[in-house]
Image (cartoon, rainbow, N blue to C red; front, side):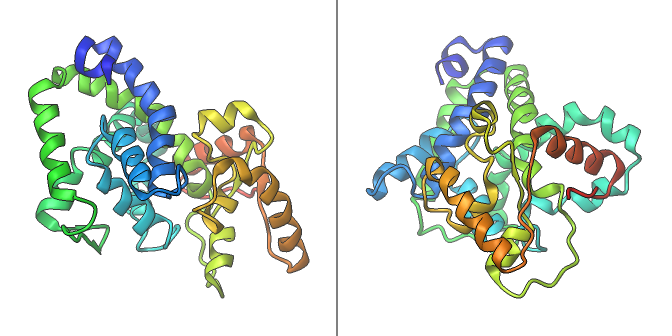
Length: 273
């Protein structure tokens, strides 16, 4: 926040974007899943502070916890609502549009959410309840700070661009490479396993770079458990999946990001097994 609200130069805000994409995202994410503390107010504060440079934190709650986690890669998942549009575009255009997509994604999950929260009163079709999470006071504080103390527009664009270059691939790689999956899943748990993928699960670098989300299968099955526990849980999950004939994807970072690139450019999935 110091780089963004006090230094305010484009370079400082780009650096703030990198910090937001790694440290801020993790703080907000773990706070939103009640992983930081047993005390509710501590988790709410982590969600608020971690997301504050980007947007009102309840936007993340509705987008991620309510929409994405309950309906991973399904029609109700807000994270996949634009993929059908991207699939209609030629690959060369999508490659050239990557800088716009990076900055636009952060604008989508940040300032644009004011429209969803205040005017439309739904996020991805999920109704927004103003009585929950002190949403209106938070929006008022967020608007006041950003309007009166925020950096110039160019610095905001640099922030969105830098954060988006990290956030978009690292947050989508474990799901987008499996979308769309035409299977009818017999249970919620099987859906979460089928629509998620672990990647680079032995790598400390990718663990921190991807804000603790290299074990997405386990996270989607047990979202309230801290990320530091997933390294042991994934061994049990893999064993149970093998016992019941359920495919459990755990691939290298090279394969995962290669599949994401193919999914983006070609508009269809590639085999992971």
